[in-house]
Image (cartoon, rainbow, N blue to C red):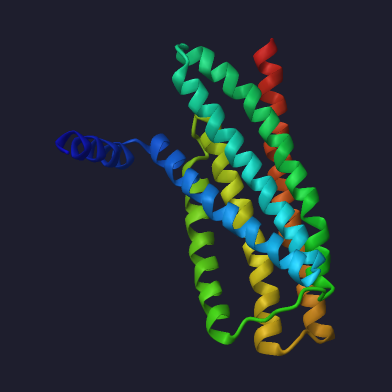
Length: 228
């Protein structure tokens, strides 16, 4: 019993003091949250024959793949008896693959975003869940923005990729929240709201695509420099 308590205290202490370890722990928790969203939207898509829910379920599934790939890759590196330099070389190759997966996620979002703008998604939220969703999305944006700023000069490429994924996930939450609020409180979008929804959705999508493209170009540069 005492050994378990000491082990638990050791993990808590490491979470508190080790930023990299803390990031991977919370990313593992995010993995299960994303899994729940993917399963839930798959169920809704099949039950209600909703193309939007199937599309967004695919998006969450791709996020799962990237997060799992990063976490398990880092776990393998941790277990191997490698020098810091060897680990860094392997992370650079992994970062390149992860950046390609991130671009694939962006392309997978085109369909659900288009359906959202064209009002092909049925909203059944009442006012209270919609407001709660707004609060959660605001918190998500704040945390992901703060973390991505903190990791601008982070050496660990796995950490940088996880922060990028969280930020992109938060941007997509804004898109979903925007349409939810319009349909919940406005009863649907008129021509002006349609234009606003289309323009803001386009701007947010461009932002997340630019971030993914920048990440990909950085990974190409890192790989190229690694070979020279």
